Amino acid sequence: MLPRTEIDGHPPRADDLLAPALVNYGHVTVMQVRDRAVRGLDPHLARLDAANRELFGAGLDGERVREHVRHALGEVADATVRVTVFQNGEQVSVMVTVRQPSEAPTVPQGLRSVDYQRPVPHIKHTGTFGQIHYGTLAEREGYDDALLVDHDDAVIEAGIANVLCHDGDAFVWPDAPALPGITMLLLDRAGLGARRRRIRRTDLTSCAAVFVTNSRGVSPVGRVDDMEIPQDQDIAARLTGLYASIPWDVI
Picture 1 (cartoon, one colour):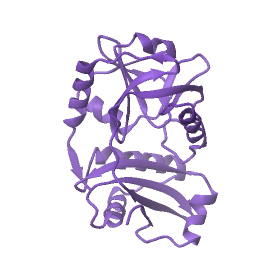
Picture 2 (cartoon, rainbow, N blue to C red; picture 1 turned 180 degrees about the vertical axis):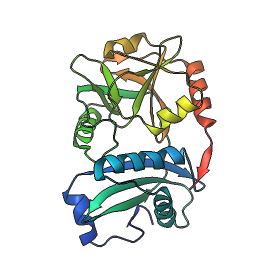
Picture 3 (tube, rainbow, N blue to C red; picture 1 turned 120 degrees about the vertical axis):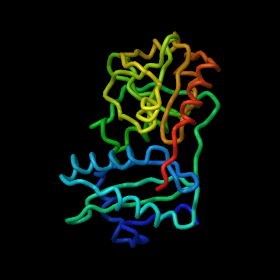
């Protein structure tokens, strides 16, 4: 039955959940698993190791993570898998949650801008109150997620995704202190050829197309606040084709 959660390879007891419930300090990665494989397994493991070194002063063995993910999956072949790492007494524990698989929306998404920047933005950490809060407010107003911008109205990232623009000549990632997402990294490795430059919120209407990217894949953006965002089917097809070409790694 899903969802299913294990901590260090075992179903958690109530006492095992006290640390992650009471102390909001840890790091995370989320992956889509299909046929017991994932796009970019090595970058996921490398991100967990790097974050663990920064937060807890020691590396995190990738094979340990893989074993816990395989065990939590059991006979499940397709799923959304979240790996959460937290301090549990003197040791670091690995919590794996297995949920139903999820695909990126294909309909244009609506984003509601908010002046907010995640703390320690280069780490995918468990401190997500701001993202959840502003994402919830955006949904209440009829949007799909929040768009995080700085005090000068420069685009940073979406609440749960990176933002990717096409300026008519090339793809562009916002040059801002955002999480370097795994899908962002994989697209760059696959030959996206994206530049990085400062992008203001009002610049988005002059783009040929805008997308959000995360573990679910790539989705087009159709509006930001009250601004309509252009749609370009050729650019979208090129991007989704590139994403589809990224190989899958067996866990």
